[in-house]
Length: 113
Length: 108
Image (cartoon, rainbow over all chains, first blue to last red; front, side):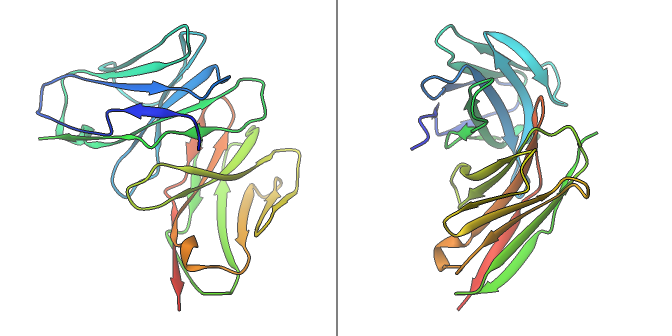
């Protein structure tokens, strides 16, 4: 059991709507990263949060934003949803300066119609 | 930018060894990972290696790292039907870059 939990597991939205995905990191982990995995592809890095600040960002537009809270949990927000945003969104946590282990949650599967 | 390449498919007979290969471009990678993903599931961390290591063995899994050639491999000994999945190589420095995954198919 990885200890990283994500919610919701599945959701359906329509184009133009906004979505918030949530992640609780594994106990003791202070860094959270978000990834987008389209069907048949590897996960693509969206951004990383460390101590409540964005600490690295992939090639995603500003309508992808996030937050990290004092308890190290995190949210991913996507505004103005597009059809291509349909994917599995994965959250991963690790401890900066720790062993290097990076654990993933089971993901939130977003379908945009 | 950083890139991680893997072959897309591998077929192996049950009981044989599977070797999944990965090449990467970022020489500053600190950690190198292998993840397993079964249909509809998230990513399961199988093993990882620190960049100053050449080899790591964990039960049926052996990871080999050739830093000079930027080549990482995962060997699964005595491959079983439960090993059928997609295997992702990932390399990490300030962020983690994944390959597209190798789908391992087990032949009876």
